[in-house]
Length: 188
Image 1 (cartoon, rainbow, N blue to C red):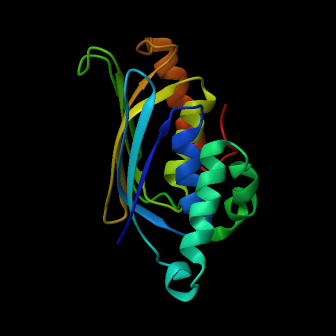
Image 2 (tube, helix red, strand yellow):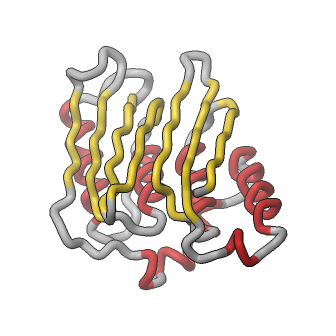
């Protein structure tokens, strides 16, 4: 198991870009936590494995991954472009075995809408989920992710323009997430 910790100032798509870079290099994210302070400082911690052996078989791999992560954090690398080829591959697609759960809760937190997502795990899942959330104008402020067997269990605390999501915004985001999870084109 490898661990990555990132501390930086927040910016749009930051969490999505970091998880996308890890996915690009074939890393399987098992657990993660992300939080943003009120003044915009971000702490992201990812625990992942290297199922494809990129880190084991390439002496320069850690340096290469770190350089790509630095570019992604700085906004100088186009992460969606990196992943376009992988997204079309058979390995990248989610095979749905069980029902996906997308649930919102505005009562659990005074400040955030809590999004709970349970889905079949797949390469790039966290990237695609967080990309849809950001693409729909939402900010991800706190994340707790876990992979249990072949299931991803993700809890994200989100806002839109600094406020909890309304019922209509929740409904719209839920539809976009379900659309993406059904292996259709990326939403929003």
